[in-house]
Length: 256
Image (cartoon, rainbow, N blue to C red; front, side):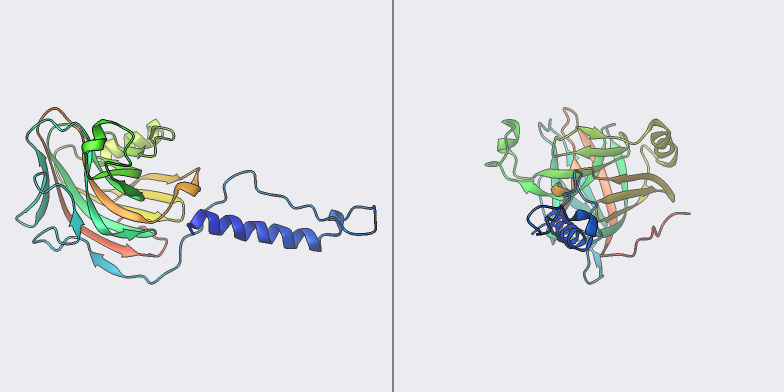
C-alpha cells in the first residue's frame, strides 16, 4: 500500500470519529444520529515515512555493483561514474540503483563535461521496460524512468517524468539563485532531501529549490536514477560521492 493511500485512509477514519463526537453533526428525523463525514477534496499532505535510518555509499568507487544500465554508456574511471554517448542518443536513459528508496538524503557531486544538455537525479518512480513504454522510441530502451527528475546544471528545477504537467521549474527568482549558485562545466556539490511529499535541493551550500508534489498519490519508493539525456551530439557527465541516508532528520546538512 503506498503512502498516499495510507494517509487517505487515516484521515478518513479520523473524520468519521470526529463526526460522531460532534453534536452538531446530528440531524433530527427518526431519532437516530446521522453522521456527516467530510471527505478531503484535496490530496492529503504525505507525512515523512518511518523506518531505520542508515547511511549507504551508493557508489563503491570501483565499479557499478548495485546499479543497472547500459554498459556502453556508463563506466567508472578514477573513482568517478562517467556517462557518455558518442553516437546520437534518441532517448534519455538512466543508471538505476537496484535498491528502492522513499524518504532519503542524497549528497553527491556532478559535473557536466561535454555538451550543454542537463542531467539529473530521478526519484520516487519506477523503471519503465520496453513493453510498458508508450513512446515508440522508448520501446527499444531498457532503462527509462517514470517519476520526478531533479535537473542540473542547465535547466535547473524539476521535471515531471509522469508527464502530468511537463516541467516543474522554480520561480524566476529561485531559478536565478540556482544559476548563480551552480557551475555549468565544473563540479557542483549537491544535496537532495526527499521527505514525505517534499523535495529540497541544495547547490554548493545554497538552498535553490523547495517543492511539494501536488499529487502525492503518485509518490512511491523507487530506484535512484542518474540521467544521460537524449541528444544528437556527444555528451559526458561525471558523478561522484553519492552517499545516501534513509529516513533522515528533516534538516539540510550542506547549507552554508
